[in-house]
Length: 238
Image (cartoon, rainbow, N blue to C red; front, side):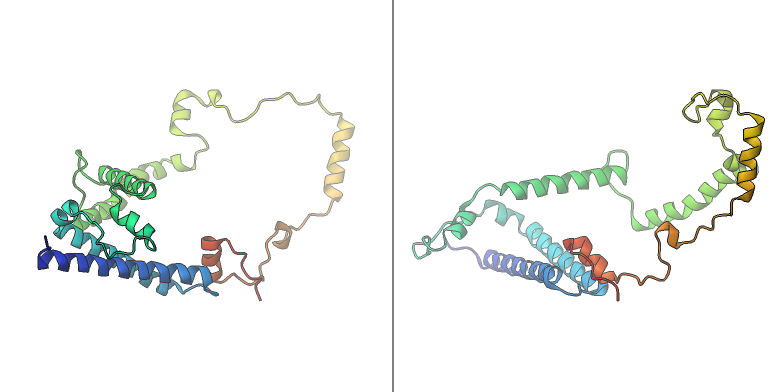
């Protein structure tokens, strides 16, 4: 039984979208693996937008033809080169998802469910709109300031103890490891220590002594991105 023209167009559309997605992914992986220097940040953003658009188009096609893709079964024609294209044939006839694909889907569904529960109503089935999220963040600043203002006026923010520690009594606060020190020093030893401290020159701590070179050249952004993606050692600064 031949498929209707609408179903054939849907299959061709899906094939085209998947081919475009595969090409975009290959281009991105090639740029990240072979690019020296790495692509610029605007180019990476443009590639990410392209991938997102391809995924959205595939999702739209799947949703519009859900009945077709869930009930359609592929089978090889006698002219199909099953001997030379056995991996392709097995992929087409496979009824279950690849284990890696199943793991990806499970992680995606868990993340989506967790996000809906954190940014939704009590039931976790709806999320806030863009306007509601903007109003929420705009009201957070004044509300936070209203809470901090009395604490700042009372000097609580500059106190060395928390409100709970003050309420329980600061004598019960554990500030460190308690240990017994040595016996009291003699007066002569104390005088000698004071003289040595007075005679010792003041040590001037410079920035270089702390392991930081203020005049060292910075590492370029593309080198940082390359190190983050591939772990390649950044080129020495010139």
